[in-house]
Length: 202
Image 1 (cartoon, one colour):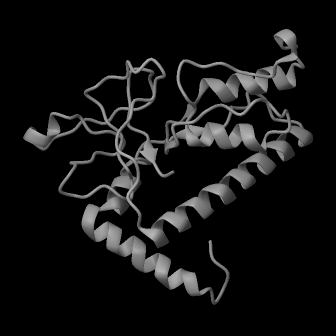
Image 2 (cartoon, helix red, strand yellow; image 1 turned 45 degrees about the vertical axis):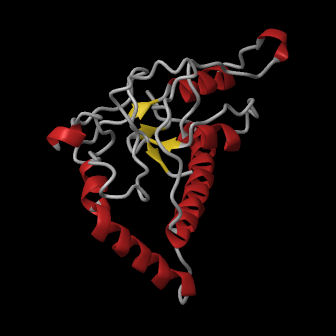
Image 3 (tube, one colour; image 1 turned 90 degrees about the horizontal axis):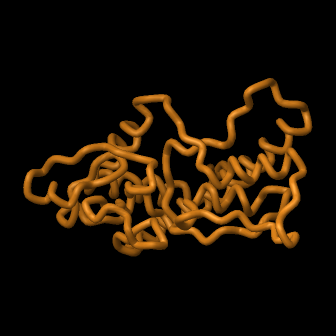
């Protein structure tokens, strides 16, 4: 993540330790990976289908519509994909169990190389964003619904993974029920249109 001898490395480690002492982010993050199940989001699945099958777009408009803004990983996947689709708007939340499209059969060398290139560039962007935020320790925006219709379940809220005050929110792995402020309990949930809870890092 850092070059050998980087002056930012010590500051970054200190920042992570400080944030963990306030919020226990290490345990929360690891808990997200206690199960190996991942999820392919609809936007990237449709993107790959049109790209690989060489489908035509109506009016040659390379736009993929969705009922809600894309997550950060989907936005980055579109940004670095060679198909040059219109980049979707994004609510900038990060789903730890996000996955690129699955390969049902062993991919060809060109397909495998393309996906490695995309994921490598995505990783670089995420790394830079994470470093910037930990070093700056700035508070990010509060909860907002994923859906453009604003019909996202109001019992859910996202967590600013690194920057919520421990006194202002009782956080679960991916989402916090508003009622947990009274009961101090929360239930993990991720992925459907009626749910919220992505980690906000932008």
